[in-house]
Image: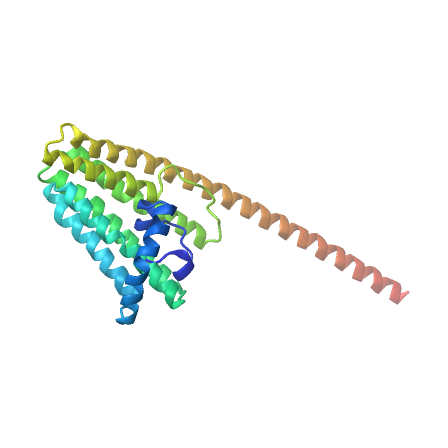
Amino acid sequence: MGQPVASRGQTATPTLGKAMLNKYARAFFTRVLTPFAAFLIRRGVSPDTVTLIGTAGVVAGALVFYPMGEFFWGTVVITLFVFSDLVDGNMARQLGRSSRWGAFLDSTLDRVADGAIFGGFILWYAGGGDDLVLCAVSIFCLASGQVVSYTKARGESIGLPVAVNGLVERAERLVISLVAAGLAGLHAFGVPGIQYLLPVALWIVAVGSLVTLIQRVVTVRRESAEAEAEAATAAAERDDNGGGQKNENASHGSEAAT
């Protein structure tokens, strides 16, 4: 959840709302939601408050409905609160605010929302779903998603670009999982066989997250080696230049003595 790059800082990772809406849909809903965002501003509501409420709604939708097997209604609730991602960003743009705090809050609450969604799947398969294999797969999806995000953040914190587009990044994880969950929930309305979409989606997310994690680790290793090689080359050049300067100074000193 949270405000996008232009308003609250650089978004290296798509927010939940951006993940679920393409650029044309976002442009449409941005125009539609602008008056509502302006109304909230006039009422003294801050973008941070909208971000917090949106995340709370996602957490509630995931942890209340998913553990009961109500995947359709849980996804509906989550999707409704996804629009807060567009509202708070719109508010921030109207206020002309750009802050490191906003970017930090955005990224932190993204992790909370992700954890709640996959946590809901875990609780279902550990309870009423009665499938320990899919429970384990859901746990792996949760853990690997957090680690994938961490690898990029940690790589960037040590000065590396981590320039790789992973196979299944956050946007793909969320869209695949939520769309599959929503459709699987239609089984309760009599649609036959559709409940198998969610297990298939979770396996896809698990394998894709593993591949993405490997891609990022390999990229960080390569970029780290390149950075260290460049640093060693630069140090050698400085030593050479320093040595040449010393020899030149020594030569000038000898000439002066003569």
